[in-house]
Amino acid sequence: MMSWSQDYDPLHAWYISTLVSALPVVTLFFVLVVLRARVWIAALAGFLMAVVLALIVFGMPAPLVAAAGGLGVIFGLLRIAWVIVASIFLYNIAVETGQFQVMKESIAALSTDRRLQLILIAFCFGAFLEGTGGGGAPVAIAGSFLIGLGFDPFEAATLCLLANTAPVAWGGVGNPIRTLATVTGLPEPALSAMTGRILPPLSAILPLWLVRTMAGWRETFEVWPALAVSGLSFATVQFYWSNYQESGLVDIIAALVSLLAMVAFLKLWHPKTTLENRDDSATSSPSNAGGSDRVDTTRRHSFWAILKGWSPFLLASVFIFLWARPELGRVLTSNRLKQPMPVLHRAVVRVPPVVPEPAPEDAIADLNFLALPGTAVFLGAAIAALVLGMSPARIARTFGHTLVHLTPSLLAISFMVGLAYVTRYSGMDTVLGLSLTRTGPAFPFFGTLLGWLGVALTGTDAGSNALFGNLQKVTAERLGISPILMASANSSGGVMGKMIDAQSIVVSSTATQQVGNEAAIFQFVLKHSVILACLVGGIVMLYAFVLPGVIPVP
Image (tube, rainbow, N blue to C red; front, side, top):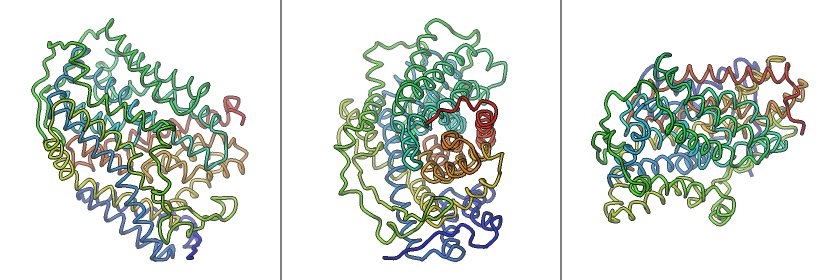
């Protein structure tokens, strides 16, 4: 069996090795932002750069490089691309059956103010989708919804990326926290509690941040009571559930409480002025499956009509929630579909200081198609389509049209995740992470940015925790800082990198009909990502040196 140990300083100068390790990501964004090439071309360029560096600079054997890239493509298509396809298919079903019009009018009946619609859909509903399934569903579904309400597509894409931040640490029924506990050996309740003491302040201000991004200060302050209700209710439940209950339902419960609080509040309060969309006419669906009429803000529907209108999304949400339950997960998951990646499995050896002692890296190709969140969304959409009267042939045509339209995005995701896996198994991303551990007393701040970098590279908070979680623990213990704090800082800082990772940008651009405009989306959200990550870093510094009593004792 082939065996190869990672080298975290192949050029014998850590700063040069760090610069070289950054080249794949730099190449991707240079081609995307500067050359303004199509996103799949930029992803291919970054992937090829990663392959060349892995072979020539890091000395990784060619069979291992090929296997790592192949494993990344498998992961990207199943875990990321499939949920995008299913989410857009769900949207198209709602449009084709005419139910999306009812959904829009039900929201308009609650409030025609675009500021409040943004909070209801992108923040509250998006957080619920993140908590139940994660993946690309929150951005894809919420973005499509906002466009249907009359939001500008670019605006919908960027705002949904911003909204999908604070809930990410407990996304997918707490998967990032469970992953963090697994790789660090630290108690999951303590990690969840610490994360729940870092992020709630940002959750509380996130609705204000979203509205201020869309509108001026005057328009923002006009709806401050609603922003306070949504943000504070979410943050309070997020803190309580993460500290005094379990980690799986943190986002789900917080999102439901925030959504119900907003609905009840809007029955009693309305802003003095209404900020409506400039054009309430709905645009065509992301795969051009059809359009809708202008939203009738005076039209009222019965409870059963509204329930029918929301049925595609309700069914998808129910299936996502069921799929996330451990009981059903055990039924759907087959170990026979989890196969070691040929050549790669346990052939790459991670070495200190990333791990206490040399350890071979697992490489498992998980082909459990039925257990994926995308399958849950697809089933909800297909069943809703049948209930709403679509024929199987028409459903098949709609799905086929969705696949054809999304082909460039599927290529982009395949290359991006292939890039991420080549950098992971070659050790390039670890080289980048190790450079931030050299910051000494400022490590609480820069360690938080390490989590941010991890999500920007891997596309998931769980991926960042798997990559850098143990490194955070080891470095913290060396510096005399709480490992609970720094492991949690990795996950908390990581959520702010979610909006700039290339996979999320592809999801948002595809769902909002902005394919080809990914560079502008990235440039817009980058400053928000950096500022929010620095705010998280400031909170972690405060806990490390001013309020250490806040840190849970394992």
